[in-house]
Image (cartoon, rainbow, N blue to C red; front, side):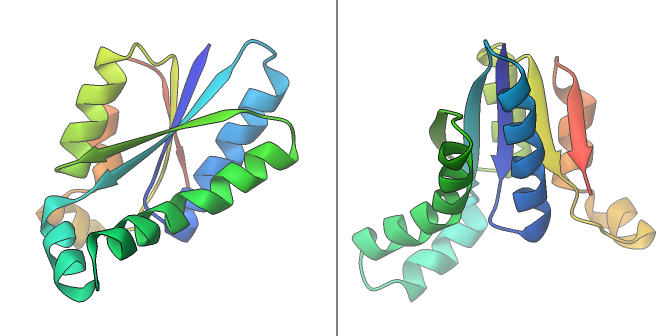
Length: 137
């Protein structure tokens, strides 16, 4: 079974990762994949603020590292996939093409007005992936 968790460095993403790790722990044949999408709009800002490409890569890896340490701490092996682009589109495309069996993603906790105007990544992903999805609050 392939379990994927999409993260962005937020508290909701950390809670989603903990849930995905727990699932992988109790399913002996499970493979855990951590997906991080570098948003093009945010990536431009990050590049302007970073000293070098190496420091930008380091900042992105720092968002993934705590999840890898949590997984390793309970004996779950995790693979990291770094993508670039629009987060919802990239997650949908990747999850559907890689035949992921279960996706876990954090909720951003937007209020109703913001969600109607902007839409959240988890809401868009939920509508378009071909596998079961767990949204962790």
